[in-house]
Length: 58
Image (tube, rainbow, N blue to C red; front, side, top):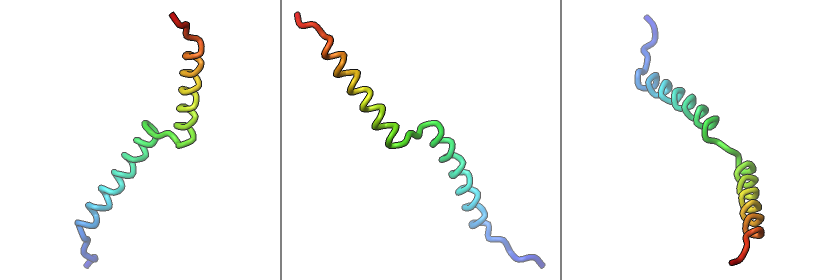
């Protein structure tokens, strides 16, 4: 006779595997590294400074 299977453990492991797949998809869709975020912020701030420097006073 085969060993009994714990259905709760089976269900939880299946849910955990699905969550890992979903997390991987979200990392690809939304994830940026801290370096990428800080680089984008620095570029945005530099563009704002350059734009402010070119404004004319009325």
